[in-house]
Image (cartoon, rainbow, N blue to C red; front, top):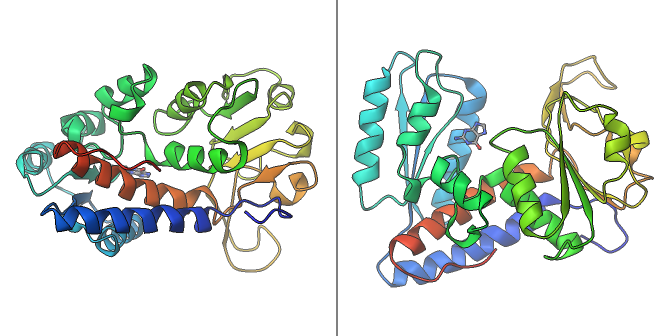
Length: 301
Ligand code: GUN
């Protein structure tokens, strides 16, 4: 971040993470270890197709073995579980990611929990959630969006958040809960707010760090912000053409960026904030999995 700007670009920080992953991968490959990532997609959801393609490409760019399994919409749960069992057993693969959502006839929770915790680079397995919740961070795979958000927070405030109030809006297993655990591990005083929280704006106004992950376009405005706060906007909402200025559809966050800009100390933009960090942390997790599988020290990010 340039020192005169309030806007913290995730693109720049993500590039730095990816450069680090690439250089560490060169060192691993020289030792005969090539990190391997398998991504699995079931069905034809267009957004999921785009995400999976970019994850596979990024893995290649990092120098990984990158494998993609595209399964038909009518694939049975048993077939998917059998594929995962074979990926779990494949020593060339260190990370496995099954893109969500899955078709309705497949029990997503069962599928996610069938991935070996040692290859769970999404960090969704109970074992990894438990390690994070109990503070065994070095051994845990942390879900990529909160992990990336935490890297951005550290860029602004450092690694020790003692004495700071953090509010996370959203209590999902993928973002809100792991985010709160990361902030707690960094000594912040943490509140998890959600749709049933009373007087949400006044809860948020206490936050030195406000992380918003609700999926509600521009919900947070300047009345919710403590002056000088760091605001991390995890939302990615597509606004239909004509809803807004201009005729094409565009992406907005959960925070009303223009409205809060004068009040915040720092804010992550949408797009170009947390989004690029998510995929970079997936690569970092895959590298970490390869290091752990081979008893090597893991690089810090
Ligand atoms: N779908 C949307 N986000 C994610 C993610 O982080 N991981 C997986 N596996 N699927 C997703």
